[in-house]
Length: 234
Ligand code: ADP
Ligand code: MG
Image 1 (cartoon, protein in one colour):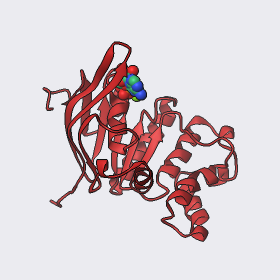
Image 2 (cartoon, rainbow, N blue to C red):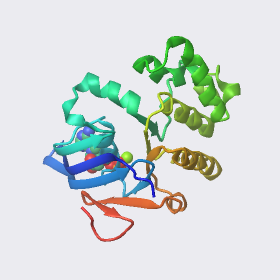
Image 3 (cartoon, rainbow, N blue to C red):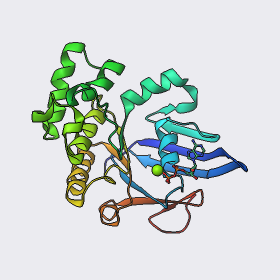
Image 4 (cartoon, rainbow, N blue to C red):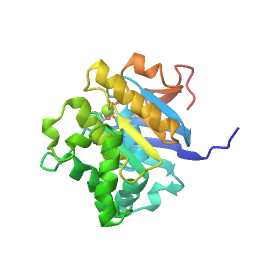
C-alpha cells in the first residue's frame, strides 16, 4: 500500500468563547489526524462545535490552546495576513450558502482566489477559471451573475472557486444542506470524484444517507470527537 502523509493534525485543541456567564468551552481538548486523500465526515448536533472545528483547521479562527498543523504548516506561526494567503493556496472552503459575491460574474468569482494568491499568471487565470467551470458543467453560465443560477449550480460554482488554486485540502460546512436531495446527491458525487483524484475532503453533513457514503465519520459531542459512533477517541 502507498504511504500517505498526514495533512491535518490537531493536538489537544481547546476552544473557548466568551459567553454572558463567562467562557464557554466548545472544544475540550480534541485530537485529530487526517491523511492525504481521505474523506472525513463530521456530524453532531447543532451548536456542538462542527463549524468551530473546521475554523481551527482552516485558520479562520484560532484555538484557545493546542496545536494545529495543516499541509506541513503549524498555523500559530502565521500572522493574519500570512494565514489568509496560506489558506488561499492550500485550503478550499465550501459553505452551505455558497457565499458567491453577487456583483461578480460566476467566472469572476472563480478567478478571485487566483487573483488573491497569484499562483497563476494573470493571462492564465480566465482559461483556468473556464476549465474549472467546464468541469462543473457550468461553462454556459460563466458570464452570468450568481443569482441567476439554481442552488445546485451556485454550489458547483463555489466548488470551482474552491478548486481555483488547486488546494490539497477541501473543507465543506454543510455544503449540501441547502439543496434538494437530487442536487445534493450530484454535489456529493463531485466530492467523491475529487477524493478519487487525490484531494483530502472534510465535510460537515446532517444527512444520514450522505454520511453513509463516507468511510470515516467523526461525531462532535460535548466538546469531544467520537469516531464512527464508537467510544470517545479523544
Ligand atoms: P455547529 O457548527 O456544530 O452548529 P458552532 O461551532 O457554530 O456549532 O458553535 C458551537 C458553539 O459555540 C455554539 O454554542 C455557538 O453559540 C458558540 N459560538 C460559535 N461561534 C462563536 C463566537 N464567535 N462567539 C461566541 N460563541 C460562539
Ligand atoms: Mg455550523
